[in-house]
Length: 369
Image (tube, rainbow, N blue to C red; front, side):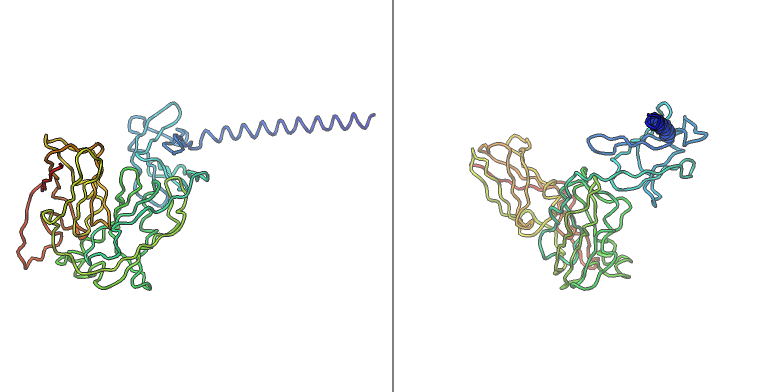
């Protein structure tokens, strides 16, 4: 009997001690959270942070932007965004959401006061490479651009770390692509534009004289994309990817819409207008630098879809074709794979006189019957 009473008292005392200890620990954690950066989430994206003013001694509330910087660890470039003072914290909303899996630091008066890591999203599917353009296996020696299309928005600033170029299946060659401080992504970060170094392509410039062209004629190249490249959600690519190219002759001619062959559809159908280009042209510009105008001067709604390794272009109308005369308007900025647009060559040979146009739009007419 006495033994049971003693045991129950000891258990009660033990429970009280645990309760007190838990309360103390919770209090410490709550106090600690007052000095921790809190991540703001919206639609599964890290859209902002709250920085406790406790981390920012002598904060001048009138000039917040000039005192605080948020940037990636090991980077010297501040992230662009908006700062606001709210109660006992500063809210920071970046222009683009923070990338998962990456670590950031907060500087106050040029001194680090905190850091935070945006956690990975283990529920998201792995991103994949949808396509690499040019899609042809043969390109001109003076190829200017490559596009990589992803299935999901990707992290920025990772391209040069995750792309390697192999020459003749054995030698890794450096500095093929122009290493830009700000990478060239489309709005939703699913399409990356890589420029081969223009200074090395243009034959009269010092980079070309010193290092030669990025690609050499009659040579094979492999663009290898590492699987470590992560999406905006912090998930690595589902698998590595390789795109093989063979560098052929230099392209020293501008595209000429007059040589294009058009196959027109029938009226009262949704059939596509098919255009044979007779050469591969820039994938992105094919989709954005051409339009169809109807008899009344209105733009015909629809989509342009490059095909057959960007040597064909199909226009698919949103509505049935009406009979009548139409105009294909082609902007002068349309380029081939070497960057030669409709008006001028990207790399002029100064010893040869070339005709230079300055037309904003070129036209071709066709009739729907």
